[in-house]
Length: 243
Figure (spheres, rainbow, N blue to C red):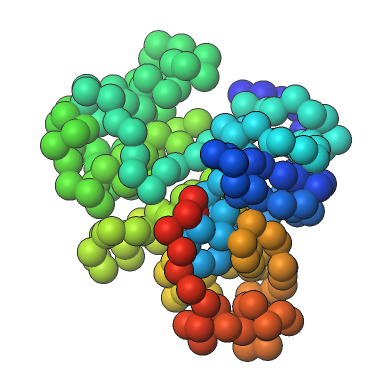
């Protein structure tokens, strides 16, 4: 585990250009320890791009990104994608592989993998091939893989998308437990109910710009911008560009 401090995570003037299009423009955003930040916006607003940029998977075109004032990306963060990328091996081996890549040795790797699978209710499926699991089980496995790393910061990109209500409820429960155990969480979602239940703050994007950040109750009950008001009333268009 990287022992360097990582908070606050600060983006200043962050810009990302993809395929000739400004996916993000002049983003100023800070994530502090203990935050429960949900990023909202219409399709194409730049939510997923921002999440990947904060995690270090997308290189900014301009601007700065620092962790506790340091431009070196710390290892003590993890990300779970909307469609988990799983290896052609067992559920437990998927978790063990991630631990091994992060420098966890032998026996500790085995027991940490089993503990993480137990946390997400997959201990009985530890030896089952990951790619034959249901969609909800695969998402829970991805959460177990991240949780086993004991990250200080977890990024979640649409964690309940395409899941049935029961599977989505279970994923929401697991995310709540991870956060309650001390992990800071930054999440994108189209599920406004999940956003209201989970978030402390809402960051709202429109056309690649951060137009509002507010406490969750204020955002939903008294949005500060016309863009947010229109979004909440279902009036914004839903373009097909990068989300």
